[in-house]
Every structure is written in structure tokens, then in C-alpha cells.
Length: 288
Image 1: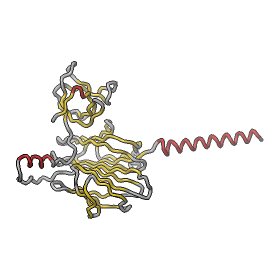
Image 2: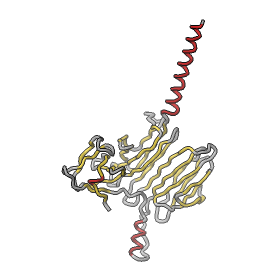
Image 3: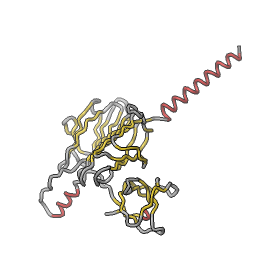
Image 4: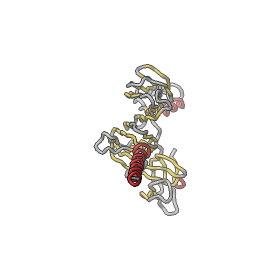
């Protein structure tokens, strides 16, 4: 009898251990979210320096692959497959059980546009917030055709429903998005405005006109770096920002590369063959 009771208790303990282990791995340890990326034209997509495919991409449970992503922060880079537009790079976050949406349209210098929509949990499950950031800043924000302020903007407790979001600024094309603001979440919208192609009025001094023209930058300018002379006559491009990382390629003094990011004495760059890698900032100079 005692033996039977011990066997039963042991079975219950094993079952409980399996249950709690599965709860940990599938509930917290492997928390995942979804990512949708679209662009015009079609672009190569790099996530944390790793090529994951061409747009459109949906790392969603509803997609055929069901290949969702672990919760966390990422660097996304879009490299257009056509034209000579500079790559687009941005930091994004993937939240548990929610969808992050990236959309970007490449255009002539100063006329690219796009948006990044991210959901993050709010402190109170009954409250919600809308955060809007724009490039350039000081853009007017309209929610359902009502002005709610200028960017950067924090708007508390919008109605938990679908909304029409419009971001507008003189000299730029309006950006119109259809969003949803659920209770218990903060919706963060990062907007990149495209400059209109209308000429700037010829008023004021030449310096004032030059200043106005400079302000018509619709998104963060992707800088370039020039490779300097090295003791070996070449510079190694590595997969990550450390000297022990694998070599991706080699570049030569005088080469000019797009600068995507910086970290602890390293530059993340795009190579002419569209590869992404890191170089030592000691042997590269930013272009003005």
C-alpha cells in the first residue's frame, strides 16, 4: 500500500514538474512577437546584421512559415534592390504577442517616407497611450481629423478602437495611417515625412534659403565613411563589432561606404555588394 502511494506521489510530482517547465518555456522563456515589413521598391531585409529575405516579409503566426521572433530589441536595415537610394536603418522592438509594422518608400534625396508602429505594455491594463515621433520634428498630429499637438507627442487614453492618424508639416507630404489603440498598451508611431517637390519660395537671404532647404530632410540622413590607410593595405569587415568576429569581406583605403550604426569604436556599414558588416572606426572617417 505504501509503495503504491509513493508511486502515485512520484507520478504527480513528475507531472507537475513537466507542467511548470512547459509553462516557463512557452509562457515566459520563449515569449514571441510578430514583425511585418513592406517597402517600395522591393528591398533586402537585415535583422541584427542577418539577411532574412526580401520585402514583403511577415514573421507572423498566420503566415505559412509561422516563424515569429523572440521578444527584444533589434536593428532593422532595408537595402533597396533597385535605384541608388541610401539604405534605411532603424532600431525596433518586438513585444510579446503583438505585431510591429515597418513600412518604407524610397524616393529621390529628401523624398523618402515611412513609418514604424510598435506596441508596448502600459503600466495600467485599463489605460492606453499614443506616442508620435516624426522626422522632421514639430509636425502637426491629427487623430480622426482633430489636432492633438505637435511631435514629439504623448497623447493619453485615446479611445480603444480604430483611428485615422495624420502627420503633416509645411513643405512635406502628409503621412496618413490607420491605427488601433488597445487598452493596456502604448502605441509608438515613428513617422518619416517626404519633402514635397515644390520649389522653396525665393525670399530672404541666401543663407536663409539654404537653411530652409536643409530642413527639408524627411528622414535621418544615412552618412558615409571613407576607409583610411591601414598597415596592411586593406581593412577587414567583420560580422560583429569585435576583433574576434568572423571576417565578412575586405575593403581598401579610399572606399566609400554607407554608415548604418556606431558602437564602441566600430562602424556598421553597407558594402557595395549589399552585405552588412562592422569596421574599426580607427581606420575610417565620416564624410561631412
